[in-house]
Image 1 (cartoon, rainbow, N blue to C red):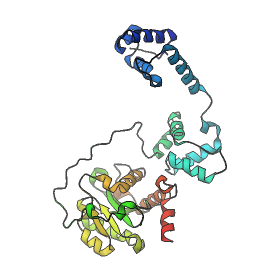
Image 2: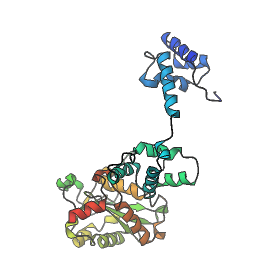
Image 3: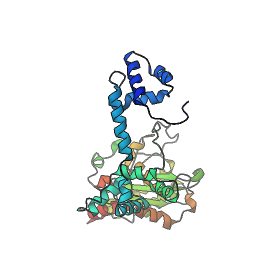
Image 4: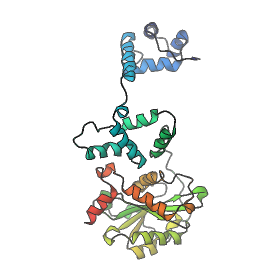
Length: 332
C-alpha cells in the first residue's frame, strides 16, 4: 500500500504505455510499478483516453497543465471583498448558490466584477479551513450532505384503510398541470421527532407561495381546522383545488371542501412526484426545521418567520423573482 502520495513520473508513464501495448492488464501494471490499481486506472482514463489511445507524452503534458491550473492565483471570492460579502449574506438568508448568482446579476447589471458561478460558491465554501465560518455556511446550504445519495425507490405500500369518497388525481382538470391559472395547491405534513408532532405545508403550484401550518396534533380534525383557518386568509380566487397524498389526516376532506370551496384530489400511493412542487418545498423547509425537530416546542412566530423567509427567496423557476412578488402581481 502506498503510504505517501507521489505523482507518476515520465518513466512510469512510458512503462504504462509499453505494457498496455503488450496487452498487459491494469492490475499487472500496478504491481510492476508498485502503485495502486486505482492510480493506474485514473491515469489511463484521464483526458478521455483508454488502454488503446493512451500515450505517455500526451498524459504527461495533461498532468502538468492540471497541476499549473490548480496552483494559479487566488480564488475569485478571495480577491473581491464586495462579492464575498454578497455571497455570505445570501447564504445566511438560506439562498442557494444558484439563487445568489442570478440575483447578483439583477442587482448589479452593469458591474461585471460582481459575477459568480454557483459552482465557484460551492467550491469556495467547501475549501474553507475548519472553523466557525465554514460550519455556519455549510449549515446554510439546502443539503448538508458531503456527497450525493441515490434516491430511494418510491414503491411504498398503500394505506390499508382508504379514505372515503376520494377523488384521484386522474380526474383533476388537465389545466392544473399547465400552471397558468393560480390557486391550485399541494399539501403535506412534515413529521417531527419520534412521530409525535407535525407541521403542515401548503404550496401554490404557479407562484410557489408556501403556507406553513402550526398543528397541535396530527388528527384529521386538527389538520382540517388548521388548514381551513390558514387558507381562508387568502382571496377566494386563489383557492381552487388541493392535491394531497392519501394520509389519514385528510379523512375530513369533504368537510374541508365544503368550508373552503376547494376540491381535494388525492395522489396515487407511493407517488410523491404527483405532488412534486410540495415535495421540493418540503426540502427547503427542512433547512429551518431539520428532521428530528419537535414541532410542539416551535412557536407559531418562528414558523411564520420561516414562511416569510421561504416566500422571500428568489426562485429559478420564477425567473428569480420571489413567490411573494409573483403572488402579489397575479392578485393585482
